[in-house]
Amino acid sequence: MAKKVMITGGAGYVGSLLTPSLLAAGYEVVVYDIMYFGAEHLHTGDPALTSVEGDIRDTDRFRAACAGVDAVIHLACISNDPSFELDDGLSISINYHSFEPMVAAAKQAGVGRFIYASTSSVYGVSDAPDVREDHPLVPLTHYNKFKGLCEPLLFKHQAPGFTCTTVRPSTVCGYAPRCRLDLTVNILTNHAINKGEITVFGGEQYRPNLHIKDMVRLYEILLDLPAEKIAGETFNVGYRNMKVLEIAELVKRVVEEEFPERAPIDIERTPSDDDRSYRVNSDKIAEKLGFVPEFTVEDAIRDLCQAFRTGALPNSFDDDRYYNVRTMRALRAA
Image 1: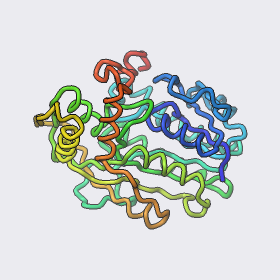
Image 2: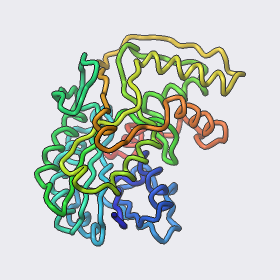
Image 3: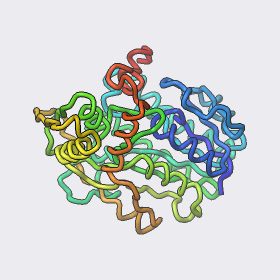
Image 4: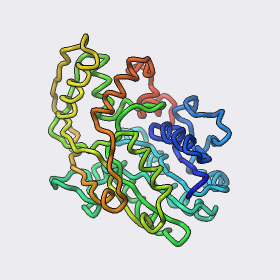
């Protein structure tokens, strides 16, 4: 079992929930993050946490930070498709060019396990009712193209003593300390609660979804499984495939239950130029690893409702920190 875990991007959306969860489970954690979104939400007072403000393109600094680390969970990237509108060069250098040098550096430093967060959006558009891991990758954007191209680069380094595995998560939803409000379920919930209306772009596109608590739970499981179960493997992970319009209708129902004074919440449909549509099958991870999601999209919406009710998500439209592209522009990171 890994005792010391590095999370690249550990101050980001998933990392901000994964880090305290691993600390609570007794791991030592190294967060390696450029801190574009700040670090005030990290448990910096915990002696088991080491926070390194670093760029994954700085291979020497990354290698040094890997000293004594048993496993790397690689979350860091310029995340989501619109972020590539900022600066292709920046995004490609972070999401692709730095990737294999980083994997090699981890291996050289004695890391025993490397878990790579790819994305289910590598499938692009598919009419298949069940998109499995061997489905052709048909990327529509630079983001999902380069996320997919990194996968074989990782597996080149698979070896006894260096276990490599890739997960292709569905779109993550729900509350985390560094919350994102630029993902489908979270966007619609924010609008329903704070604007009283939801705008659906298109609506017929299918999106696979995954509660952030299940995403965190899976990473913890992958740290502990025997190497032979996950070495060289790629796993889809998702809870449920839903049309965007179905998500909107579920958000409307839940928010009207949670905030009855805000009903009725209107849904307005408008055309969309976002053609991404795919239905991810997660049977493999259930059959091989016994992993089945425990939390629903409805749970994610209710968690967000609770966060808004308690004031945990103030200024949800004006604060750039909830929006990746806006934060990057504000920092002039592009």
